[in-house]
Length: 185
Image (cartoon, rainbow, N blue to C red; front, top):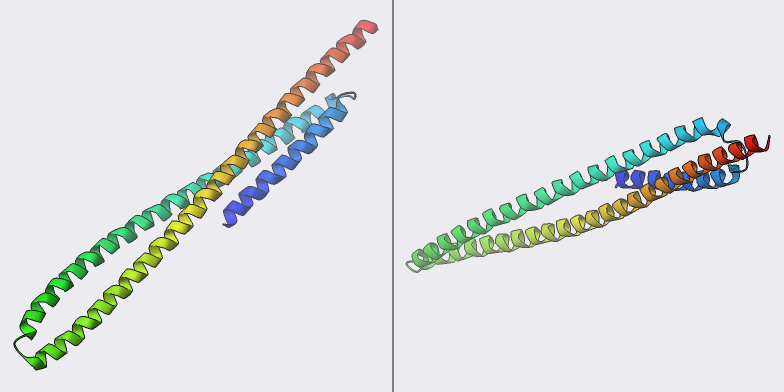
């Protein structure tokens, strides 16, 4: 959750920086670009690094989602084992019930034990069902978060590309203005 928030904050900051830079580039079109060209390239590089960091955090979230999916698979296997155990217990219970028919004293004792086992089995099934629902909900939430981060990352990339294109256009306009100035002189 913390990584997701950090990635979202980084993406938002990058988008704000890109928008601010685009506005500065637009304003600077009539001014000299030579003084700003080096810092602009450095800033673009820094923004690319921030986007790469956001991508890395998104990949971490994907790995976490994969781990949760594996954990769900282990829980399902555990449920199968419990089900097998329960079937074994049910078979044992049937055998015990056949024995219990022989004596009334033994019947009362074995029936009590059987009820306890069935209650435990019901409790285990309820716990496993609750765990499964919890994992399903958590995995669904993580998938949604991952999709949201990926969408935000794509938007950040598009904004970065637009900023780079604007920067190139500003440089080209500067070159044309210089050429015009030289031609006028």
